[in-house]
Image (cartoon, rainbow, N blue to C red):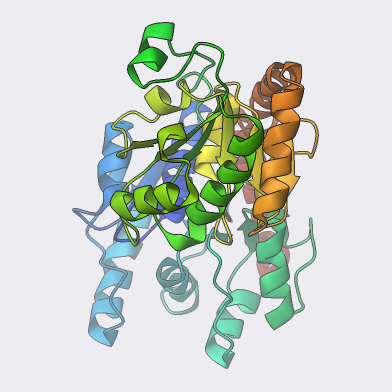
Length: 385
């Protein structure tokens, strides 16, 4: 029978560097740093594989768990079972539905006697069919959700989730040694046309409608009428919207000179250090909000919408201000409040850094995750004793 200790296998099959991939690699890295060996299972040439190797983590890439072909699944199970046995894997943590199916089948079909943990880090509802319920209810020992909203989504489909008994909520973690408070030099801001005393509000996200760039610009237009010296920065990769489209919209709103546009930065810290206040204007998404944690870790207060995990990261009036999604007037009022009382920017920024250190640092992530694994092991023992 399994005992505490041993190596964890973080299974994350995702073709792009998204919230699930980031969360899985962060967990593996946090556990490794805390003395719990962790291996990342992800196909070769996937971003999670490259990021895990950059973090000096061991990677297992031989299983192609994205395939639904029965023969491929069987081959994956054989390869995974050999690897698990050889490397003394003690916990399977599945971060994607495909990985969850394989982990459960290892238990059900291959008789691999170790706990299965499912970590949920996306906005999708679970597929409501008998096989999926069977996997979730009978072959999963514990669930980790990155936000309470995800618990509510799952609970609405299958009402068998009980906090502490079979799930916990862990929003994720951030490297507080890498992301530390720092401020751009006056010369850096001057090069961008920013006056020394100007307050800069920054939205850093991929250019996609769900991220609320248009709402941000509409709010900026309202603020600009009262505070013409304020500046508004948008940085991110063009995915579903182009920079030129947003620039045209800013021109239509009459605020083009007050808006700074930048491409996605190789080092996001160089953008965060320029801004005074972070803005997360998302209309949805944000089950894991990496940029929110990064801004907070660098001592920036955050104005954020009440979407998914954001109210769990930011206490309204403490580390920032929460506003309804899609409400440009509410967002503008929050920005104006900070402009009228600039001392709260510093106070909230310090509080944001403190909260990240105490609740979302990598050591805290490791501690919370390992506690969840111990509960998974306890449930596994109760079922199989």
